[in-house]
Length: 154
Image (cartoon, rainbow, N blue to C red):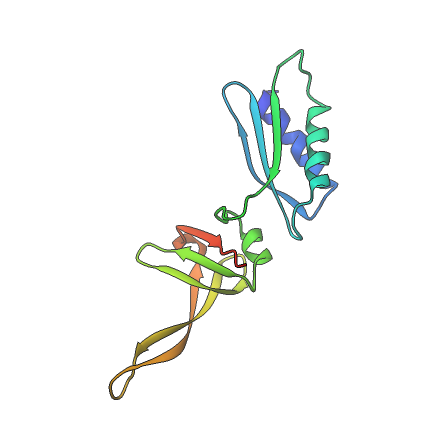
């Protein structure tokens, strides 16, 4: 079994014990640095990273292949990559880049096929001069999203 497949199998087995934790990315560099990025439906805690790290490291033989291992949670400001991440972030504000526009709005719904965003915008009045605030809602299929990032407010 190739090294990468063995690492992936060990990760999959370790994640079975933690159903709320899911794999975002697995990278293995040419010099065998293993980089595992995790997310959790309720937020990744340090113990999750420790447990996954031990499950992988304790089942690989450094005599067979020397490696380094880094297990971390997905960073704040990292683009969303999986449907599960969108579902987890319903109710939060996203910056969504599409082919022709960028929208900053509240994620009000997410399912397996699309997201629904809601935001207020200033538009010209239909009658008379000036502008009015209108509520906008847009359904966006995942295939149209170039990048989506959760905004962090303090």
